[in-house]
Every structure is written in C-alpha cells, then in structure tokens.
Image 1 (cartoon, rainbow, N blue to C red):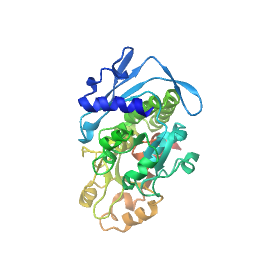
Image 2: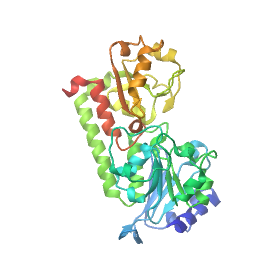
Image 3: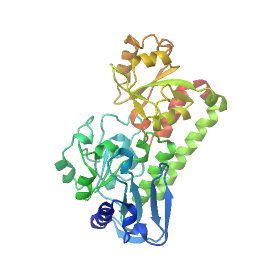
Image 4: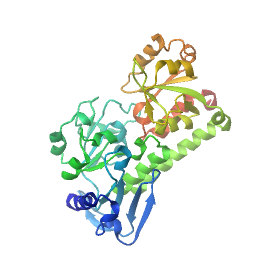
Length: 359
C-alpha cells in the first residue's frame, strides 16, 4: 500500500498542485468530485479493485482527498490518493482516537495518545488494547521522530499544529510514507457538518462507508431529538454560556467552530461568539462584563471540581450570576472539540441548560 500511496503523494508534491498528477487515480475516468464545507475537493472512483487485507479480500474503491495545507499556512494544498486502507494509524488524543474506535478500526491502529484532554464519557474497550505512544496527559508532539517511525505508521491524524515544522512536518511524513490528516472539524469555522465530513472521509479511506453513514445518521437523529425537546422558543432566546476550558491569569474559552455550534444546538450561545475563532483567550474583565447565564467547565481528566472551586473563589468570578445561582455545569473537553461523542455531548448540555424541557 505504501509504495502506491507515496507515488501519488510525491507526484502531487512535485507539481505543487492537485491537477498535475495526470496518471494518478485522481484523474481517471468514472470519478465524481465532491466539494467539502471549506472548499476542499476530493474524488471517489466508481470502479473497485480487489486488495489484500490482514484477514480477507475485500472490495476497495481508490479514494482521493485534498489535504488542506493552506488552512494553516503549511503549504499549498495537495492530493492524497489511497489504493488500500492504511494499517498503521496513529491518532493524537482521545478526540482523534475515538473516531477510529467508533468505526471499529482498532486493528488498523499502531497507537494513539490520550493527550491532555481525555474522553471522559465514552467507553471503548480498544482504549485498553491499542498501544499508547506517550503517557496519559502527554500529546503526540512530545514524542520523538524515532518513536513514530518505530511504529511503522502510515497514517497520522491530529491537529494542524502537529504537522508544523516544529513537530512532524508534511515533508517528514511524506518522506517516511506517512499520510498526514488534520480533520475538517478542527477548523475555526467548522460545524457539525464537518464532523460528518470526517466520518465520510474516514469511512471511504478505511472501507467502512456503510458504518460511517450509520454513525452520522445516529448523530443527526440525536440532534433532532434535542431540537424537538427544546423547541423554537429556546433557540430564539438561548442562554448565554461562558466556557471555561483552563487558565487562571486569563481564561481559555470556546467561541465559534465546533464548540460554538454544539453550544447553539444545545440551546445556548457562547458569550464570545463575536470572536471569529474556535478558541481564544480574552480577559477576566470581559467575562465579568458579559456576565453569562451559565458556566460550562470543560472536563479534561476528571478535573471539574478543581476548576469549579477556582471559579467560586476567584475575585473575578465569584460574584458572577452563574456562580451565585449554582449554574455551573461540565462537558467532556474531547467531545466538545468534535468527535464520536459530540452529539451525545449536545444532549448532555441541553439537559443542563434547559432541564425543564426534559422532565
């Protein structure tokens, strides 16, 4: 698999444009092009070819996606072409790993990290069997290149920053037969549609399209149930929410992107929704000025009690309405960034923000 994929990637890199690889599967006949939510284009070839896996022969459709390097200023966009499913995946953090666990792809994984932001709600047995690259609480960016290469990794999924020159650059990945993938849902402008897009991409790349579609439909059904329970009046007058991720000198908080969209679907709106980013670090003075209806603590590793105690005793926040009224809630940080449990997280938040609607 690696030789075929590397050839396609090298071709794309040499011409610095997806259109230059005239002899790859990306430009053969019988292909449909789909445009993603951020303008990315990827293509699926209708004809299938037989490929050998570890357990059985299965039909695999060659699949091409565009790696959006321009999104983070890493370089020009380029195509990735798959002629068989990767077999040595590394996922950075529970947020990323849960995509694979949810799709039953643990046998395709060489390892993962839990990172600092754990999945504290979803239980997957594979979390105990797939090798961990680093200790719990340590991100993949702290691993050495030698550690990564020793796993035989052929696909790496993480935030954009993981593929910067400071860590595992795109050039490093391509030179070593590793396909880098940073999800659609990590964009500052992402919504739930981007989570669905990541399921679609992974479903096609790993040959589990039907299961991916089922997972997406289950999320849509869950969100529809929440929407019906809340009703139009809630969405017309949402509660204002201060998301407390971390920070004592200044708060790191959710604004727009996937976390902002999740809050809106739960009948709320971030008090920093006017900041055109997924995450930001405003001042405590701004939090006090906006005086939220509720506070949502992001649970990193079962640390919500410690964070709540800080909010109750800090000179900045102890007199906020939400603190005085006891409207301090929590949500899984991993799910709030876009992951397998994001729809369930919306339901949890909705029940906390609007308990009367679920009696």
